[in-house]
Amino acid sequence: MSVTNSKQPTTYPNFLVVLELLKPITWFPPMWAYACGVISSGASIAENLDLLILGIIVAGPVVCGMSQAANDWCDRHVDTINEPNRPIPSGRMPGNWGLKIALGMTLLALVLGWQLGIWGFISTIFAALAAWVYSIEPIRLKKSGIWGPGLVGLCYEGIPWFTGAAVMLQAFPDTKIILVAIAYAIGAHGIMTLNDFKALKGDKALGINSLPVQLGPDRAAKIACYVMAVPQIFVVALLYTWGLPLFSAFVLLLVFGQFIAMRRLLSDPERYAPWYNSTGVLMFVSGMMVCSIGISQAVGQ
Image (cartoon, rainbow, N blue to C red; front, side):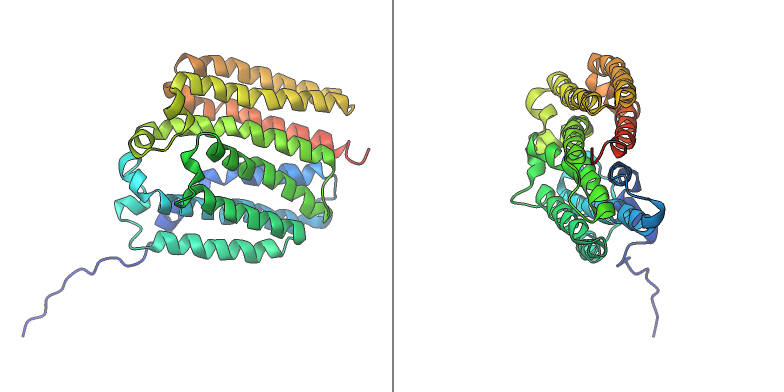
């Protein structure tokens, strides 16, 4: 009688593969926007530190991480073309573990979101639904170059900003906060359009009508720049109108810095889109924090 030792196939992913699936690098925007919302509320952070920490965890690792898992599961066929080394198409995430993780984290998001109060819970429900609506067939809003980036921008910037303020106040935020959150959510549409450049080849092959696919890189980049810039100019005007000229001027300087970066971007969009994401976008999010500090002095007036 002989015994044959054979290596059993892996039936579950290791921790590092799960972490790769959840893409920690993508957690920053909603965490930052939530923090901006918290600060803009004008509420005491020291007295509500638990809500700040829990909200950041929900916005980043949980909800955003879940959205990445859901997107990668729904995109597994696209990624065999665009990025075959990702956890699911490469086989490092075995079986249907990608789906299990996405569903499990959806449930976790709702449980934790409930701890943030009614507005935090409502926002969490919206964000969780948006993650699936964005990725799953037959809805799959990411196929649209308009609705896809718009939904992501809303969930990366607008909803977390609103949630941060609403959770701290345990009430619907001031109109000033709502206006600025909407403006930055619209601006984020342009950032998401630039992010689509990296998937241009696969999107063309699989019929995902991103703006770079529909309009070509040059026109899509120009539109993205307008979409990023105009809402920020609107914010500059709002801050000035609300009696915050120093904050208005500071945000305006950051916008001018983006204009300089945009000139380089437009010279070769496919080449410089990743570069802009680490330069121009940094100025964009810096303006968010400046704005939130200013608003905290103006809410309720």
